[in-house]
Image (cartoon, rainbow, N blue to C red):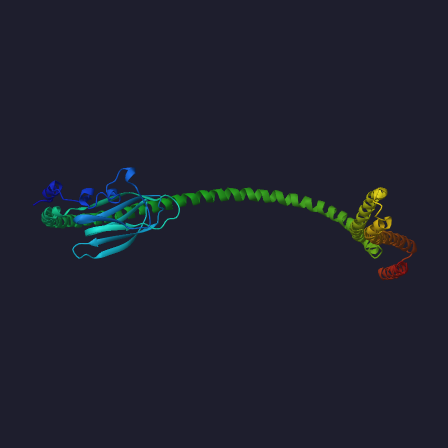
Length: 410
């Protein structure tokens, strides 16, 4: 038998496949739970509670798949499925997770009844919308057995024909593989010849390029030789110019050295601009001024408060006769004492900070005066004298010590 004929017989063969098991094959069809089988109406929906919903067949059925359709159950909610097998009467309990609003169970066995127990839910309106049962009825099994025998015979015939054709294909593949090896060898030979040709062409091209480059080098060397001759002539003229510039630089260097010596001589004197001390003094004055402003502000606020509250004493005439004026004054005395203490302490602190600011400013003026005097005295005493650097440094150091001693005495 050919494979084509086997395929035609398989196409015409009608094999019984699992199909829907309707409500008519179940007992207790008046139950609302049982009416969920094959349900399409919203009136038959059952509220999902944490209890067992049981379904029982009139006679044992071979069930392949059971689907419980749900609403408002989230994916992953697990329900407990239980079924009773035939003829052993054994039971099987499994946990089924909800996926896409359905619990689906693969049974593939004869059963007499099954049940589902949904999980506990505290929020939401969960319902069971329907039950779909797929399987094969008992009276269909004799036909299925005949179909299985026919399919098995067709399978054996098809396998034998396929093996024969597979052997023929393999022999052809071997021949094709040999031809491909021959083609690959010929292609390799052609590639080698093409490579040899390209190598010869490359060598010829490189020789021509080297010849052209040699000609360019010869012409460039000639041009460089003429440029070197011109450079020699220009270098001879620039040497004379550089000699004149060197003489001028020597004169400028000597002048700069004399100015440098004068600057070094002035380094040992007091600087005429004491920028570092001035900057530090300015920072200290700013800090003390900020500190002095705090007690001054407190002093002003307390004074204003005293004057504003002094007007309350004008109402003493309206006091009852039972209250003495001395009692009012004694009651006001703690407030007056605290305000007086604040005024005194604020005045004292403000005076201290302001005095410090004045003292720092006087020191700045005194040091400025000392630096100016030191500069003038040093310049006047050295006028017309030929002193070396050591003697000049010693006299200036002695002058600075004396001036600082007199300043410290003040």
